[in-house]
Amino acid sequence: MTMPDRCARFRALHERDEIFVMPNPWDVGSARLLASCGFEALATTSAGFAWSLGKHDQHVTRDELVTHVAAIAAATELPLSVDSERCYAEDLDGIAETVRMLADAGAAGCSIEDYDPVRTQIDEVGLAAERVHAAAAAARGGSSSIVLTARCENHLYGNTDLDDTIARLIAYRDAGADVVYAPGLSDLGQIRSVVDAVGVPVNVLARPGGPTVAELGSVGVRRVSTGGALARAAYGALMDGARELLGSGTSSYSTRGISRDDLTAAF
Image (cartoon, rainbow, N blue to C red):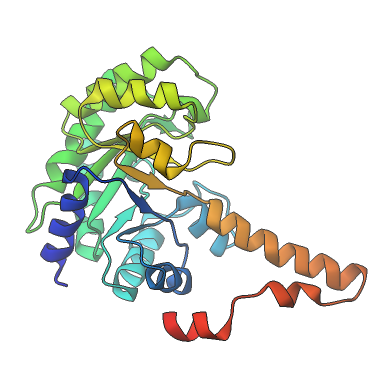
């Protein structure tokens, strides 16, 4: 598909009534494997990508991300959304530039979040909404209109005030966000409250012990993503195997590996 086709396809996924799952690969191989499973869209993961470079999350540069996005976007024909953290800029022009760079690299969507790791705090809502507005204008300003997701990070950083989270998501919607997202929410009743209040597509992060995809769909959630969980699981399997080798000296870990048939189908 052409990039305008991918962008149109990604927007259409949000406009239909059916929920969809958008898993988060961290490299070309994982992107192709996930595409071979039949998913309809993919998203990058800031944490998973950082780990693949031997870095902590929130320590990847913008140039590194843009190069990564170009590689993942070229690996499959699926629409690709980008976990673009704070859009790698403190000024509004810089935010817009990042969005345009990601679109040029092949993104069909991107996100902007309201947590500032330098100050280790959530932005004041007015400032956060201004930043969302700058990103939204850039997302719609190119040859293809990419989908902007605005994130409220409250529940990842200890603020469990649902009313504040909803107020922020509404402010981000009004600032131009196409999708809103409050990672960390796992109570189905609270998620339903968010969906009912915001009136635009809602993304939810899949969590251990949290609602199933079907349950999320039943309360109106439009999109489910996995964040860094798949990358963490893969690295966990690697560490289990390494510890087995160092400990017992056995190699039973290899019996749990991916089949050659799956690799052939994906690659």
